[in-house]
Length: 299
Ligand SMILES: NC(=O)c1ccc[n+]([C@@H]2O[C@H](COP(=O)([O-])OP(=O)(O)OC[C@H]3O[C@@H](n4cnc5c(N)ncnc54)[C@H](OP(=O)(O)O)[C@@H]3O)[C@@H](O)[C@H]2O)c1
Image (cartoon, rainbow, N blue to C red; front, side, top):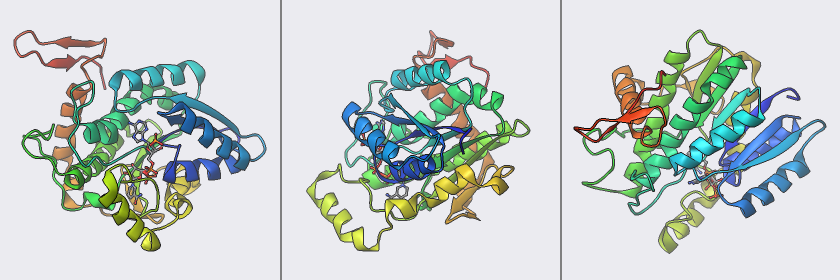
């Protein structure tokens, strides 16, 4: 892995941190993204301690709930790395109560779906120039049974923390299949995976009761190291170099839900996501009649 440059979000804890430690131990050049300077520094020290010969660990600070912050992150990454082999969109969270981001987007949707969408878009040209390259997104089996609420995308009419989380994980898979379709023939692949039920910091931010629930589940949950295995495999395995648009669990390709395989839904979600990310896009214009931002970017 010595010549591989890997960018991984959500590497301050859980699955992302465990994956970063393993990849660094194999000599990869890692760039980790965290939103807290302190947690990112601590994670980076842990990853450095695990790092093998030739590995490097760089840190970037970004709050992925903010599109301006995602844009800053992408600009910093592009300025620093002339070559980018792997982008791992791993950061994610569930929020028990409905909150809006600075951009006016419901928070779970912004972090879990729009941040991977926008970051991938902004880094896509560099990934293409670095081909063969890979984009990997941490999805979840929680997508099963979920639907994209196109008539209430900002969850204004109803909000249930877990239901919303499931929608975002469905969006991760739909994003992956549409991205793979668009990347066909470029040498850049897009895949996603379910890590299993993993004992991490996930859902520890939603009050005492949820915290207790996660503690009760701990004995049946996997370790972060086990949860990270498929992610590490998708980054490193030579025989997935030509596989794209797939959903994996335990290093095996699995069919996701029928909704997650629907190309029409994937295309529709793509167009809406593009508009949702256009607000502070310098290449976007605002339609004076409807006041909706319209992206002119070409992807
Ligand atoms: N744990 C499971 O059972 C499970 C199952 C299926 C899928 N997943 C998925 O696995 C991925 C990783 O989660 P995990 O289980 O490892 O949970 P975790 O331990 O809570 O880690 C989540 C990571 O995402 C980061 N993050 C959250 N919100 C962010 C924001 N606004 N900006 C920047 N970074 C942010 C966190 O940073 P901080 O350190 O700053 O909080 C942390 O590094 C998620 O996409 C999750 O949906 C988890």
